[in-house]
Each structure stands twice: as C-alpha cells, then as structure tokens.
Image 1 (cartoon, helix red, strand yellow):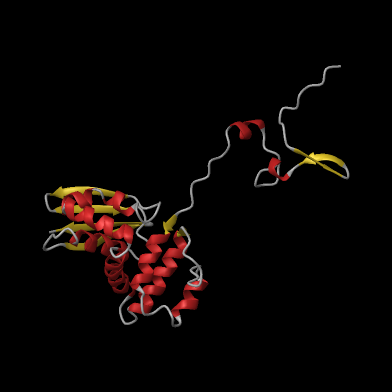
Image 2 (cartoon, one colour):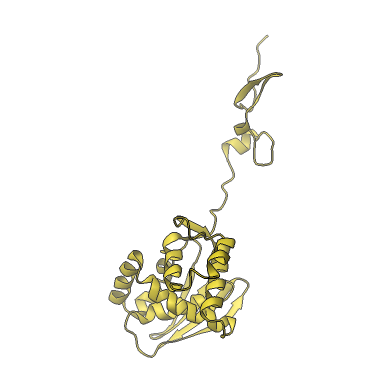
Length: 222
C-alpha cells in the first residue's frame, strides 16, 4: 500500500508518548497552521515606535530635572535612566514620557501650553544631538517652503509612524495634516513651528486648526 504524504509537514520532537509536533509548529493561537497559512503567512504591522535618539533629545530637554522625583516616574513608564537607551521605544511609552516632561518643566501652564513649550525646548535639544545637527543643516539649506513640503521625511528621522499630508494654499500659507497628533497636538505643532524657524523664516505663525480622531491639522503662515 502506498502511504500518502501528509498535507502539512510539521517539525516533530520525540517524547515519552512518541513523536509530537514541536513548539515551532504551532501558531500564536496554539494550533497547527494550515497549508494555506504556511504558504501565505500573516504579516503583522510593525510596532509604532520612536527611536532612541529622539528620547535622547527629550532627556537633554529635561536636563537638571532627572535626579529628582522625575527619575522613578520615568522608570515607571518604561524609561530606566540607569540603563543604556534602547534603540526604540513604543509610541504609548513616548506619550507618557512627554506628559511627565511637560508636567515637570511647566507645572503652572495648561496642558496644551505645557506641550507647546516642551516642543520648543525639545527642538533646541534635539538639534544638539548628532542626528539633529545633521537635520538642522539640511533645513537651513532648504528654506521654509521646501522644509514643510518634506515634513514627513523630516519626522521619519525620529519615529516610524508619523505621516504628514502637506497642502500648499499659497506661497507662504500651508496646511499640514498629521496622521497622529499625539495625546496633545501642541507638541507636534511646536516641532513643526520651531523646526521651520530654523530655516530663518520671519513672521511664522502656527495654530492647531482641528482634530479628527488621532489626526491633527495645523495651519502655518508667514
């Protein structure tokens, strides 16, 4: 009699009861995958993260406040200052770091104002890092209009999830729609505003025009 080959091949391990599928043969749900699942595996989207040098910029922003009560509070949200910085941190941890930073640096401001001022200080601190200095040189060369038109590329140097749609309304009037404005969109608005000021532009104004779910819209004119 000719034995038919099993439709699904799985790695086997030997045990007391004979051969059994090894751990690598199972899916996350604890079952053996079908032939279709093996041939066309599910591709999970990458985790949304900010990169380590972005967190480094925040630490420079918080210089002078890291040895007090803030230190254990940062550790509680995933940033252990006694350890080397990780290559990347989850987005939600980053949002908690920003909230703590805004509370510590600007305790007498509203949450929105505190995040705006935190963004201003962050831009200055970020441009003091190695990658930030390289980006600053590029922005000065590009000028305000071209800087705004490549905002997504600029943002991509610090994380893997922000996307910006840029609408040119006039020569010096732009609308930016950011797919994730964060818990408090003033922080991203400040990054766009003070980052663009680096180009030498005069009379720049930036306002948060609105929010739609996680997205935020900004109007920038000069």
